[in-house]
Length: 68
Image 1: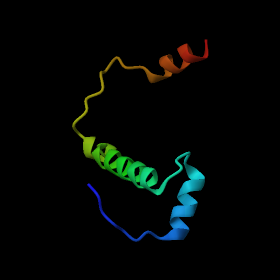
Image 2 (image 1 turned 45 degrees about the vertical axis):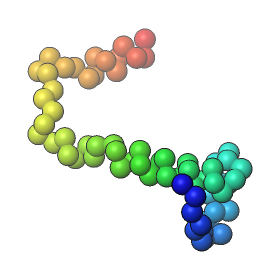
Image 3 (image 1 turned 90 degrees about the horizontal axis):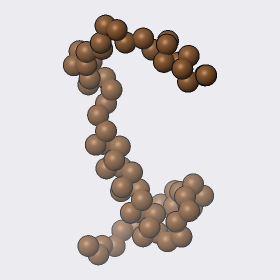
């Protein structure tokens, strides 16, 4: 889809410093992808009361295994 938009040059320059893209088109595409992905992720707070943790789950034991 082709469209013309007016972008804030200051934000565009700053965004280029944080990415390895070289064109404004790539920059806008990346921003749109990240925006959509962020909104697809479930907010952890929405899971409250919906997730059951097993009674035998021992997170401390799992941490010890990682160190060994």
